[in-house]
Amino acid sequence: MDDILFQGWPGLGRTALVSVLAYVGLVLFLRLSGKRTLSKLNAFDLVVTVALGSILATTLLNKDVALAEGLVAFASLIGLQYLVTWSSIRWGWIRRGVRSDPTLLVRDGSPVEAAMRRERITENEVLSAIRAAGGRTVMEAEVVMLESDGSLTAILKGPGVRFAPPG
Image (cartoon, rainbow, N blue to C red; front, side, top):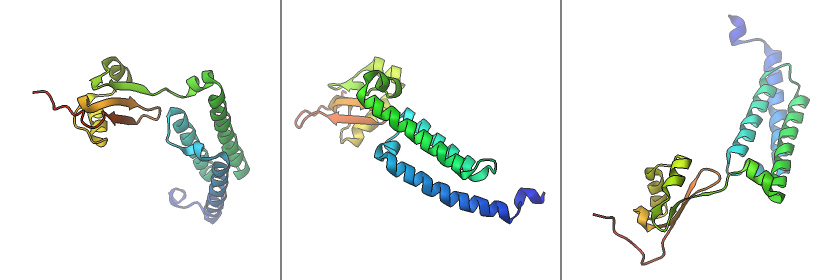
């Protein structure tokens, strides 16, 4: 029972030291890799971020994993993400493999039902985006887009093009 609560000072010291060093290493690698590494997350970026957290936790808590191994894992994963994002800028086939294109959900005040169904977006979610942009009804929207990162963007029709809700 004692091992569950406290396994000795050497384990605590190792965890504290490795925590500080792994944190510093991760921050340095992320700074070197640029802002794009942890930008607004799409599915690909989310997987990388979760994997970084898993590497950090394993490095901190698993005595069989040395700090150097954890840092190599950080560098490898961040390097691979950098390579994939660099390649996706240059080659469309890679970009299509790791990123999704934005989807048009509303065009000129009319919902694009097939796109909403395919993307599993409800009318209430679309209306929420329209309200966030200052509108009240779907008819007030020029477009509503489902962005690559999963957020919704609504662009309202120009001034003077306001419609009253039907009924």
